[in-house]
Image 1 (cartoon, rainbow, N blue to C red):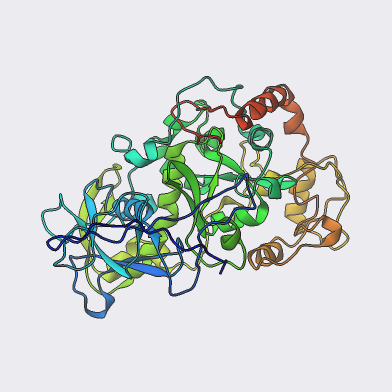
Image 2 (cartoon, rainbow, N blue to C red):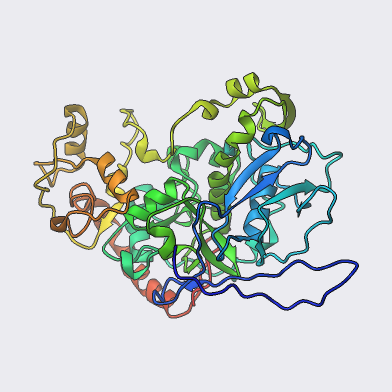
Length: 476
């Protein structure tokens, strides 16, 4: 737990008939000013339980989800973040609100104030009764194109022309590297080695396509398995921060009209360093960030879906439309395999390579970008399995002695915040596994990089930029 400033509490006029809630705010830090301190209290007890009023309080049957409340000392959660999460799982309702007790009044808090109680009931005023239906998973969720929340759409700047033509999928990593130049979360702490991270994961390409999310792509020519490989759906993240992002440990939400890192899970050091950090995003769509937020939140419903009671649900049918269904537990388990899954992530880098007649897929190892072009093999690297090594050799003709690190161990060490090897510059992977010998794509788009370099300098000096149908955060 960090040394925290005392939360700021606004003085209130007392009222005998309708007392106002305590209004607590929070402190942010800017990613460009690492010496500042943000509010963060990650004690395990600091979490808030959200209850469904349509089910009885007995045996925790109405526990909808729980969210970590790290936003102030003693436990507090950004009201707007909690409200966004509950509205999404209730089918994009615009009329949801919180009560502390069934018989109490709706709480009166602004978007950027904090929830302080340990539990709240989430009500939907446009529902015929309290048993409003829940969307069970990200795959069944419909993106709210026509009802995009005002607090998120307010992040959109003025529309400007993009700085350079969109890259082909093979050039996405190099484009994002040239545009962002640093990890967007750690900024100067992630300038050497960082990864191109999708907002809507590549593994969710079917959801992406079915929901027409390509309308927000800069590159309108993308389709099929490359449909998510757009610059507006990608940002640069340091390797360990990328792993935490894919593990749903944190998300990015609007607070005080800034994009802010919100940690939802426990970490050894990352949360203490980056929770409530405002970050500066270039050409990143607010729609994709909202979809990423939903993707992060939906797994938290598993406890609600695993209870014995029948559940009223909004499920997507074969035609792509939502319909209401009342499902018992055995039906839910049969319908939603994720309830029995122990998989922690659907990140595409966890999927095995497949051989097809199409262009070979790019490897996620190649998405890790380095400022160094040294491709000497690591002394502790071990050979890949023969079939995969043969595939990689064909993709990396500049390195006939290709060998590879233990990715699983690297993930475990990074997640535990253990230091990397000194001979690898403190990293957990060697240069080969960071993909620094992937020079062909970079050289292919070299003409774009000069324009992007000038564009990046302009952005860091105070400009703003928006891709087609997308948004970027303001740059301080």
